[in-house]
Length: 182
Image (cartoon, rainbow, N blue to C red; front, side, top):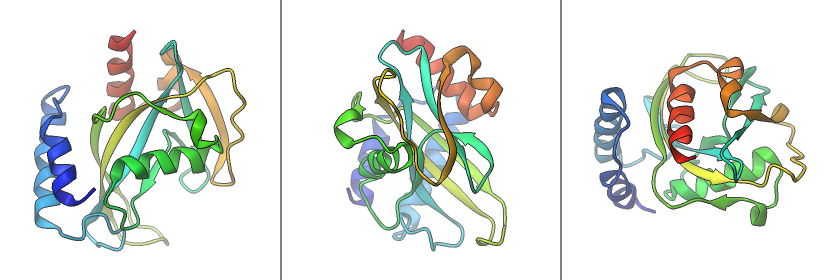
């Protein structure tokens, strides 16, 4: 997926609210202005890919307690130069959950959610922005999830308890979108 492919994918996205409409406009502008938008070395920010992993019943969400950030998140990460952000989201889901790719089912190829979040400066690098493109993934919640060394824990969380693990607006928005799918 080239920048134009991602812009095309984003052109079909319908924001959930005004804040997300702003994320969409800012993300599209960033992609148009930054030929290197998929490279995590780009100082001001970069495009990332995530997966909102739900159970077939849409009653549970798979969250990871991230070792580096000491917070609960959905699977996702840097594109590392890969222009296919959907492939990035699928790869990160496989890597961070330890699930084999054949157990990870893309619900559809559309963007499920869009977020822009600030990453503060740390020993890992300067402050920057993540332009996070998220896809809806389904995994059977009856199979074991081995996880990997990037996370302290990988856990199925009931949809109504997600806020106990991650109470940011982004997670709340994805929970609301998931409720509409049931």
